[in-house]
Length: 390
Length: 180
Length: 66
Image (cartoon, rainbow over all chains, first blue to last red; front, side, top):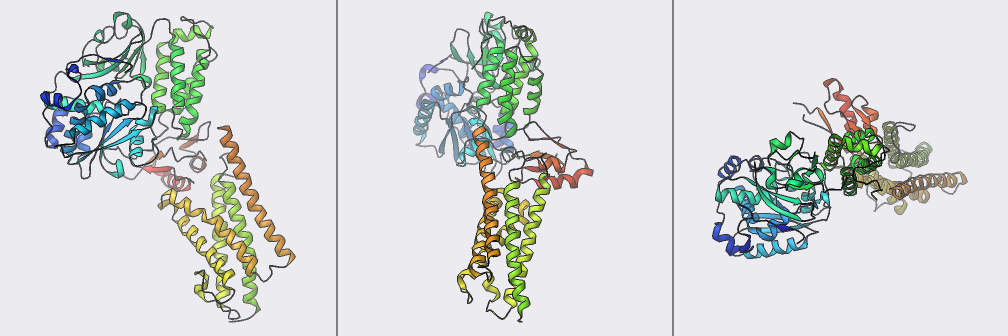
């Protein structure tokens, strides 16, 4: 694996014991049939929020999906290339995920669980298949796997439902939330793998301490998945040097926070909200020394533009235009007006939030790095980066 | 009933139908390419196509009725709907009935367009091309005036118009795809 | 409450612009020909909005609940 995993207090505990079911069962009883309201209340008391990026309250989703014909879907596709937390869980703690899904399935009265696996991380598929095979005996649940395409938007909720329905793995318009009407029009509980793992952990060990998984990209080049207690100071995640830098919080659909902003803050939604940021899927990327944030952003936006599913006009046209405009800003040719215009044009005008997330990232560049942008307009760069991004 | 009037009515509506159907098809083909803001508004093109098509349908009713009512040739009313079993020129008549059936499907689905899934409507609407083509062949085969020079010229012109329109549409699509 | 918000089914929209022609008060077009929809439909524009919905050749415009 291209990253390391640090031992943690709950999900990443006892990593040395291996991913097998027997070891897992020593500390986690097999999930029985739990009345839905008890499970929902436990999730609510723990304020469990989705770990796929949107942070939606899980109890609400669970209660909404609690109608006849409910479908349970575990989203392990992890389309964000910088995120490795679901991969880590799948490789090292698959049964946490599967137990959580089993709990939800039993509470909703369904015997089948759908697992959406990442097409570009085949080792994850392998491990999950092994884990499912281990559970075959005794558990009266059917595990159905689907393999998502490689690509940023393949893990989007509706894209996943399309994949499950045998169609192209791309987003379509959602006229209702999937918990109301999803797979074949049925109430669909579709949540991130870590969310299910957290559910299992909350159920068997109680709500405290609340944790989340973070993928940290250190400036040394090392990538680590670690489990952080919510409310811990950011110094638990980032080194003192890194805390002095601008940080990209939330992955490619996240936002920049300015240098030093995290130093006195905690890993908590409220602290980040002050900066206009969200925890998202827990990807944390401090800007390495000597790297230009404008350049870095231009590259990310270029990547995101190429990842458009190409289904919606404003995204298909707007994101490449936005990537070009950001590059013009990087080259000091544009003052940012065109970028602002395009951010407005792409937001809220697509079947999914891909353009919105991209626009948010770009807006944070304009918000926090005005000084850098002025330098670029004078054909200077504090980090010596004025070559074309390509 | 008998008499040359019915026969002329049938022949006349047949020839005019060819032209009206051709116009409808050409309008349909060309309006599918248009963008807003250039020339005639899209909704106007759309309505004209629709109204020309409905005109064709009403003329078709006259065309069929005049043939059935006329006792000079033995065309029963169901010969207009069922493509086989006709007594008078069964092959060419059958083609006419087939064209009518297809046109009926297109018309009904179009009248109910907003209540159907778009994909279903679109699939049936393709049969419009087929209906037109079969109608042209029906005319050539059964038409009393089919051998006349003006009739041949008219038929060629109608076919050319549709082929040209389709050509323009296809090259436009190809150009767009190349640019993309 | 009667449906009074316009929503675009983006994957279906081909940017033909008929909606803008039929309801310019609420729908304008961006530089690529795609509709910019100011959502809420005042009651006075209800019939026009319904015509715009019916007029879309791709059925990509819908009137939904607010």
